[in-house]
Amino acid sequence: MFYVYYLISTVNKDLYIGSTNNIKNRFIKHNKGKVGSTKAYKPWKMLGYESFSTRSEAMRRERFLKTHQQKDLLRERFNLAS
Image (cartoon, rainbow, N blue to C red; front, side):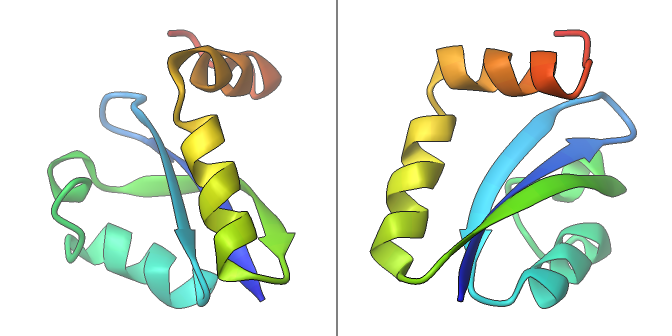
């Protein structure tokens, strides 16, 4: 399985969207500062995730969700101030 996941920084409320085949391990890496793009804003809270059977499906969904409009819709879905 492959996953697209959404995280929020408890420091600055930044929303991060990523994909992985091992969601537990990836979440741990984010919170240990092992991911360059997120280490400055840890700790992170998992908001949710979606499952996919192929890596290409997950990557397609991740790219789609990273568009500005879709990030705004995720913020609305989770009641997050922008």
